[in-house]
Image (tube, rainbow, N blue to C red; front, side, top):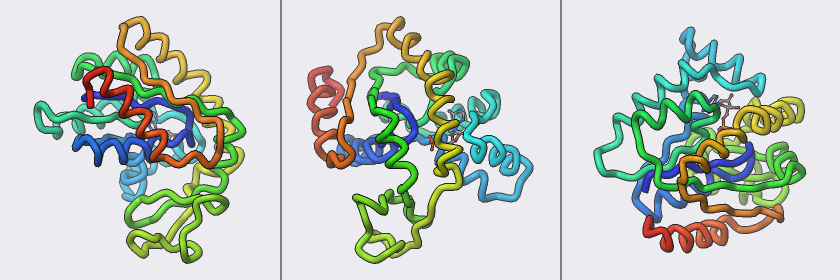
Length: 217
Ligand code: AMP
């Protein structure tokens, strides 16, 4: 299965993608994660990327497309993958079409109030990337990862001003891509999120049920 997982910031793309990855033995590619790694380096590219990410803006297409092409070329032929956070512009969608055929779009519909609530209280493990929430998905020990004992931190773009900008960017630049994929007749699996505390397993089970119908799981 070659899939795109699509939804606003804070819709749970990373959480669902990593669970589907384990269940289906496929790869996940998160451009956000790739950029956060690049930002840790003191390179000119790291500094450039940081100004966009921390401003809640999209990294320029030429940089994103180069990185994704390289990452996709590392996936063994015939192995499935889920793209998390890519494509985010029409230009990126067109570049993707030249290198891969997408079987399905997993679309997450989440109201703004849930996004803001989730992102402003989200914490992430510095070591293994596990996601927590200081309100409703607390670690057992304050700011310590249950899974690996790493320290939790708040992403620099999970602050209220930047969250607002990211939502605007999603609505203006990213959502129009949906029309593009619909026009290409690529099947959609739509998950509606209406509560803050729906366990991820339930959403993932529903996705798998739909993917089985499409013979992709
Ligand atoms: P995410 O972890 O997917 O929320 O991405 C975090 C940030 O990384 C975004 O707000 C953008 O600044 C940048 N980013 C991630 N993926 C892309 C992409 N496909 N195109 C442009 N910028 C991206």
